[in-house]
Amino acid sequence: MTDPQLPPPAPYTPVPPAPAYQTPPGAYPAPVGGYGAPAGTYQPPQTAAAGSVALGVIAFVLSVVAGVVAPIIGGIGGYQIGYGLPSVMQYVDPSTSDLSFLSPVRDQVLVGEIGFWVGTVSGLTAIVLGIIAIAKRRGRVWGIVSLILAGIGPVLFFLVLSIMLGIGAGAGAVTYYGA
Image (tube, rainbow, N blue to C red):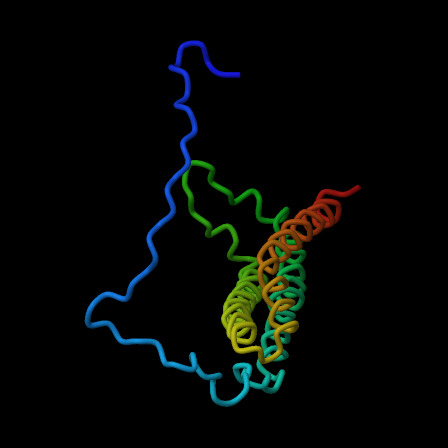
């Protein structure tokens, strides 16, 4: 069925056969017996042998430090900070952004900060080494696992820190203000 607004299609006319192909003047002629078979047999490309998995394992160990050890350190520091906060709340000045009220718990803040920086440095190193291990096929599975664990490390750190800070503040408030 055709569209009534378009003109009818042209009737089919056969295309005349093409004339026989002739070699242009000055072209190289094909060899008389045809082309010969290629010399030698097919050789698949040589791939580099996978090296030691040590690079991937190192990346994994660093990601465990970033994703497990650093959140534990941060959680310990967070609990201690939270436990000490109720006793220093009277020194908080809401009109300024002065953090000097944390000076009684500065040692615990330092523990949390050390956990943060240990996790940051080891996590970034684990990500870089994991990418290299994946690209060079030197512990590819270890590299993939290290990327995943180092990627969720900051989320785990701040989640554990927040939860432990709240638990510590609750325990400190009960101790300081009574049950």
